[in-house]
Image 1: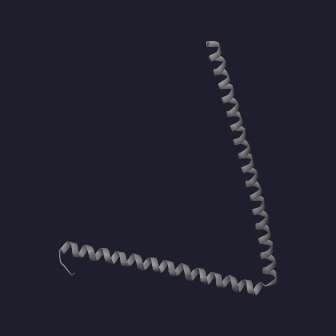
Image 2 (image 1 turned 90 degrees about the horizontal axis):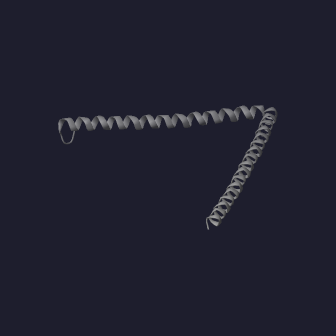
Image 3 (image 1 turned 90 degrees about the vertical axis):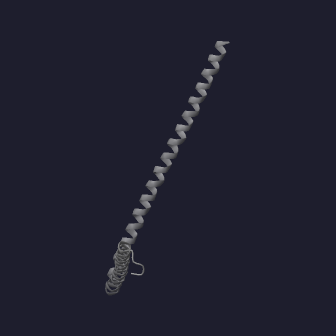
Length: 114
């Protein structure tokens, strides 16, 4: 009786070890596939960046004036957008400060309608 229990236990242990080995192998394969995919994506990204750089370089050489004008226009647009955002944020902060000052003024005097 005890011998068959030991045999069953050893079979269960061997089966569990085999399943764990297969699971570890599957995880290792998946990890290896992921690393391979990441390397391929990095290579493709590098090739795409090099191609964009070469295209841009050729475009600048062919159309230098248009490139300078377009760059200037983008700079002006970006500066205007940033300025608008900053001014808007500044106005909101001033309004909040004014509102807080008004609240503190009214609450300290207990005056209605200040």
